Image 1 (tube, protein in one colour):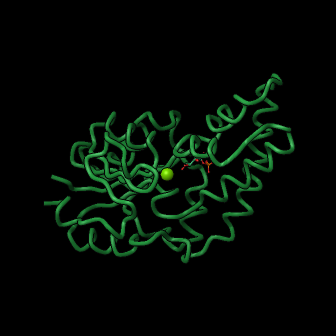
Image 2 (cartoon, helix red, strand yellow):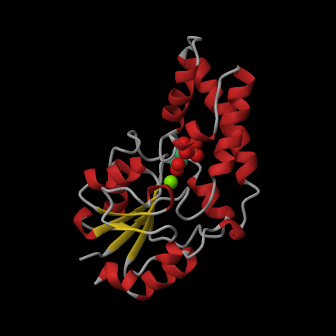
Image 3 (cartoon, rainbow, N blue to C red):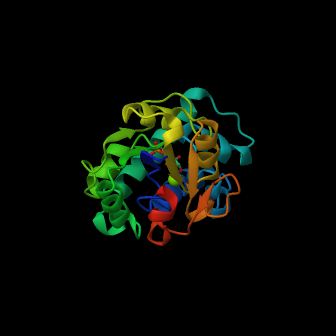
Length: 213
Ligand code: BG6
Ligand code: MG
């Protein structure tokens, strides 16, 4: 029986895809590295440094760790400027209604995100106090598809992972949920993921009565 729902943030609660893309694109252009929206799709759910490693697959130049950290920092500075423009209008369809339904049913709710910018984003969209627990990239050492962030979220909710459902838009996140012994609801880019038990294009389409029964 589902007692808790753990939401990924980027691409599930709020749309930050363009902010990530534009910030990485700026960095890649400055370095003369080929980068496009198709490659950007592979960064979904993946940590900042793992994302940089994927981008650098297209580069022949050997970068030192210090140089890589500086590149990731440059990207993040641009990204932070962009996410400071987010407002509650950027909350994805069906999110607020979903949170209301789950609260009404006594289901605990948490965030499980790879992003180290989670606190800023939640504040910008006015949901800083909306969750019972927040597990994010600042508290973990292993990025999705490792289940660490979801296991942390379940433990912060004081729930058994088997009693939690994860909502994810990234294939890496669906894999992470399954690896952690949780069922997944794939939305957006993960709406057709075969590892997910439930599927929907957006949260607005989800039949919570059917999932929670
Ligand atoms: C995830 C995004 O939520 O957070 C990834 O889907 C991103 O694309 C990752 O790389 C890390 O984000 P941040 O904000 O810590 O750079
Ligand atoms: Mg996501």
